[in-house]
Image (cartoon, rainbow, N blue to C red; front, side):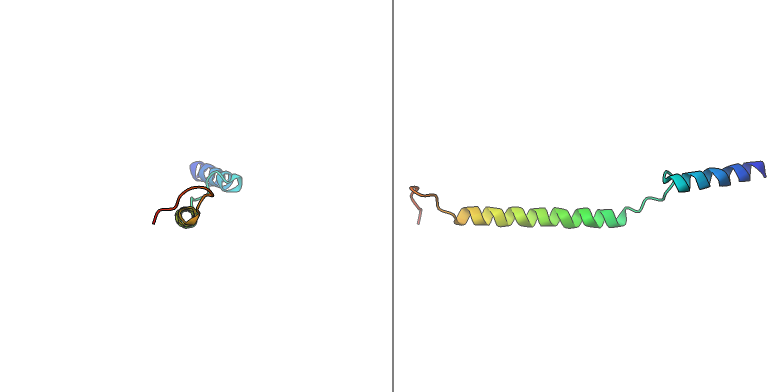
Length: 62
């Protein structure tokens, strides 16, 4: 009984302190994946925009 009481008290302390909280990694992982995709999309868009710019005085190919 003493062991169970000690475990229950320890669990309560961990829960209240946030140290024993279960890790929910699904939502953060989805956010990371979404942000990585946005980064790739923005890089591609930026590269497209740069390739469409012509610097003054620089000859164009074509």
